[in-house]
Length: 278
Image 1: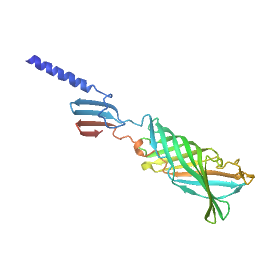
Image 2: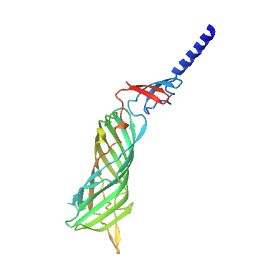
Image 3: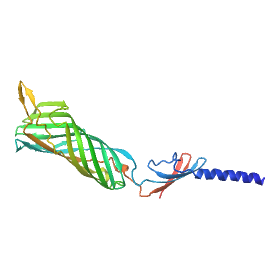
Image 4: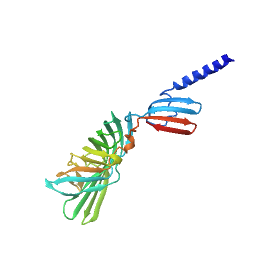
């Protein structure tokens, strides 16, 4: 009889030891998606799970945001003479997706794809006003430094190359719209528009970005023929854009948050569970 009891006790001991030996490969019951170094012990439907949170986001991850509302300014000249311009504000459509790589808690890099509505408003004289804009598809490349874990302050900077995909122009005389047209992949502007940008982001997604386009907004070699007469409408026109973007961010603090309590302990029994961070 005693031999049978010893044998049952030995089998239970082996089973318990095998269960406790399950480590990082056992992640089925670990709900924190960014947890690492997990250890799990299971007794039928009852589980004990120990783990720790990463210090920063590993690998390449995607965030959404891009530019928010845009306020654009233009330094414009015609034959060397300054042309009056009006600040231009736009909200639609400015969209973006970023691909991020954080090397540690304080330094990372990003690229992505951005759709932007950029342009200018000029007043060649008191009675005429022109609104000229392009939709661009851009690829930024930049770096970010600061508190990438909590997102309390992040400074970012870099460059972007954009492709002009749709040009639109409106002409007003004495406040009345007299002419409007748009062109896909128009030659009126350069096809590729490089720029430099810098900005900062603070907690709760509040951000500010300034972007400068050193290249002329207009293509001075563009020519058009009307009734047999060929003209170069932008031959003597120069315009450089400066954009101020409100709300440019990396889609919120959650992508960079690291719990102040680095470890967690979880107990699960069927569908019921209890977790403690420490």
